[in-house]
Length: 318
Image (cartoon, rainbow, N blue to C red; front, top):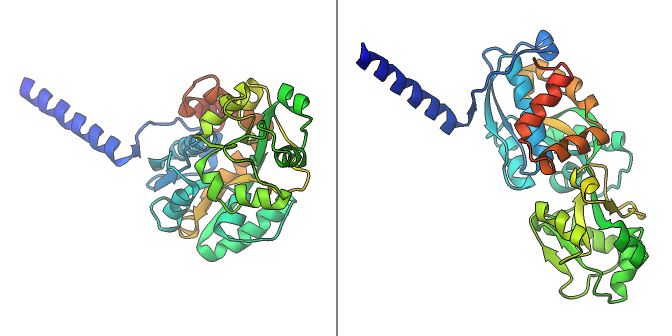
């Protein structure tokens, strides 16, 4: 009897290990209002995301909702780089992830048109991406556009309120016209090169500093090694570190509203997936995302904990 119990325990442990290695999300999620209308029993779905806090939150929300409706979920959160996540979707390595309209329009679809209205851009992306076998579910209200951040004291001292003001400061050769950026921003179609071309300036030699995105915020807050930095408009650290964003007075940055992108063949197989976007997306306003992001980046809570707490508060899961 003892041997039987030991053998059973070993088998169970090995099974758990194999599930963990495969990326299978084994944590049960009690059903809530979402599961009353969506039954995904028997479906196995693979969910991915990029590597920063907001993306990890969106990934974990999606996983929890799918699990609550009975799906088996394979977790592929925290993939480095937008191009890598997009490739994972289009090649079938993942079934879905949250993407931003501005990123798709410039980076994947290679479109030049400057569409400043969020709804117009979303609809244009939705139509154009259908040819790639990618379906865009409901658009969230929050706009996580790129921005240039600076502390209020530094902005006031240097007389910089807009990106045009920063361009003027850089042209003057001031050593304080320094910018922290992450590696991806330097090579994106909607990144640094286009920004400099639109505003007609270059930074002085040695004024650009490449950092991990999470390291840019404290660098800007401390004014070293950069006074200005590439930031995201819904990042929770903006409020916590008292970083303001410069007005994009020439309208270079597109809207970056998020939506869950799903391979069209997956959505055809499981059409009720569309209800996930319909139920969750409208809740995700600028204020909500800043607060949720801050719980992770400032409050040091795990994305999974923050995601599940929010969904329980909304009644979407139990």
